[in-house]
Image (cartoon, rainbow, N blue to C red; front, side, top):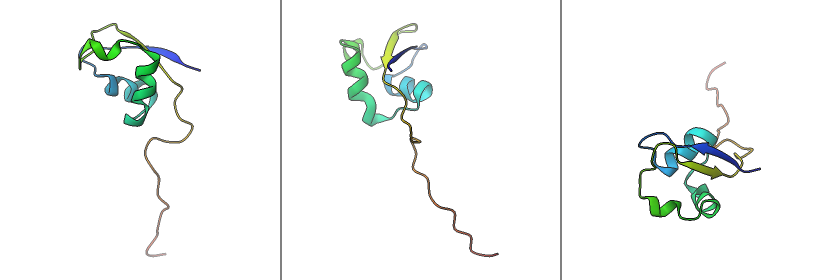
Length: 72
């Protein structure tokens, strides 16, 4: 389910979606599609801009690695 988030002064779209929903660069096309005309606003969003974002991923945004223990 898509939700809305509000930009703070000076936010870029990628900063906003990372901070609020843990979405990364691969999610930007979906966010832009949900918000027609948002790219025309420029690189920085105005404070109070309402942005519709897709749901956060079920998996973490950063890959995880198995722990390797060298000594017992």
